[in-house]
Each structure stands twice: as C-alpha cells, then as structure tokens.
Length: 380
Image 1 (cartoon, one colour):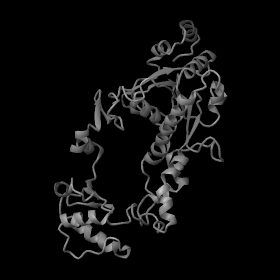
Image 2 (cartoon, helix red, strand yellow):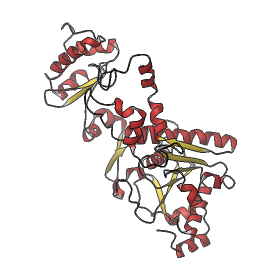
Image 3 (tube, one colour):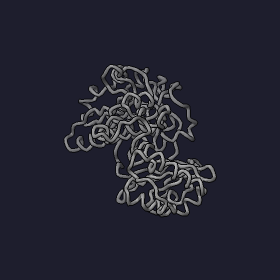
C-alpha cells in the first residue's frame, strides 16, 4: 500500500535522521530492509525494540560487514535496490567497498542517499556532531529563544529531521524520478547544514530587508511580537496566539472583550511591551479550557499549548487519526496523506536480524550463498 509500493530500499543501520528517512519511505509503502550490525553499535539512544519507532514498517537483516561473505551479501542486496540510505562519516562506505562508484555497472539506476551533518566535503566533514552543532553554525540556533536569554534548543526537529531527513527524502524521490526516466541513478548528498540553511530562506529575506535583526526574541515570529507568543492562563497553563494579520488580530481582541479597551496599535513596535502586558493580564483571567471554549475554531489564530499525552486526545487530532496505536504503542500516523494510494498502518519495529532468512529469500540471494554465509558466521 502507499505511493511507493514496489520501491526497494536498503538502509544501513544508523541513528536519528537516517532511520527517520527510511521510516518515511516505509510509511509511504516502500519495502525498506535495514542492514543491522551483529553487535551493539554504542551509538545514540538504545531503544527497546518495542519503542524503536524509527524502525517501524521495516525488515531487518544482521550482517557482519567485516566478514567477506557477509559483505558480499550486502553488495548483492544493494545491487537489487532502487535506493540506498547510509549515515556514516564520509569515506566509510568506500572503505567497506560499498561506495556509490562500485555499483555503477551492476546497478546503474541506484539512487544513493548519504545522510550526514556536515556534508561529504568541507573542513568539518570528518568531524562528529549532532543536531545542536549543525543548527548552531547555520544561525538557526541563535535565532530561537527569548530576548536576553540563551538560545532555546528546539528538540532535534530543526536539524536532524527537518534539515536532514525531510531534505534527503525529497532528494531521493527527485533522483528516483530521474532514474526511472533515464536509467541513471546518482548520489544525493543530504547534509543537515545545507537543509537548515535552506529552511532559513525567509529569515534571510527578513534580515536583509530590515525586518529582522534586533536580536533573538525581538522579531515578528520569534516571540518578539506580543501577538505571536504564548501566554499563561488562570490555571497556570499556556495558550498560543498568532494573529499576524490585522483582521485576525481584530477578531482575537473582540472575542477577548478588549475591542474598546484602547489597546496600543498592533504593529507599533515601540508599544509592544505595553500590548504584551495588556494581553498577559487578560489571558490570566480565564483558564486554558475557558479560553479554548471562547477562541478555538475561530479565526483568532489560537490554540492551547498541550503536552504530548494531551495532544493525542485533542478532538482535531482524534478526528484526523493523527496518532495511531500499534501493538499498544502510540505513534504518529504516516504523513502526508494520499487519496489515491493511501498508506497502510505502520507495522511494529523488529529486533536486528529478525528477517534475515526471509529477506535473503525474497531478494533472490542464492540458497548456496546463504548457507555459506551462515556457516562462516556472517549473520547475527
């Protein structure tokens, strides 16, 4: 099921953005097999299999890539794939003999996806790093947070999954379209720093037109504007408002009972501190639930600030089936949605090596080769 049904993907086991990329493709119907290590990697967070949600809807084969027979099986699988995803440092796949140039003859249409933080070249390319480092050198981290406070770390959504996984998926699908038309695959260099820089396009425009640059937390959509912020309610909860457009701000003010209260002008930056105080005082007069009853569903650009557990139960998320239950584990449903080729429900993640025999059979690896590899200890 899904628009990528029939597409074969090999994912080299890794952490964070590479497995999330594979999960996205699996969610959309691609057959994703993960080549796992035969032992512990010592990298990232060690998730119990049940909660290894980035591994959902994939099958796993555990191969010792230091074993010549195991390496041969990995080559055979990649040689049959439409796409490869790997998240090693530059040069690792080449040293294994699995670099893109080694498949130019046997699988010329292969789309070879490379997920790194710094990219395949550049002075930082060989260095270790994580999301926080990648978004730091792009300027994104410096731009997020309150005025006069240190930068706020936006989980690992901006770097790993936004600038990393989503951009690599876009690149893989674009390259797949080209490969199917031309018969020629290519390497997709998915550098997180490139993706995050690209995500900052609007901020670059703002800064050069003089609409951004007063410092962190002083601008239109970074919490600097009082009409684009969160406010505490009477019960100590929070609500979020974002009526940037004057017509929507007028609706908010009217519904809050402030239409005749002689508020400062919305776009008078000098008056923003006073406007913020007036809004803060007003929001503290009712509970979060009471503000939801009054404002939710209107054009006031309003929403309650919810925990993950509360978000699962919100009527809008429930109506759309945004969170699904898979074997008792809550998780986001596949996205986006396709009306003609809808994605099926996610399958639970599996432990490394669970599907070794089935993958070897289904992907056409000869039985004699399988037996020789198993006898030689190539499989976990």
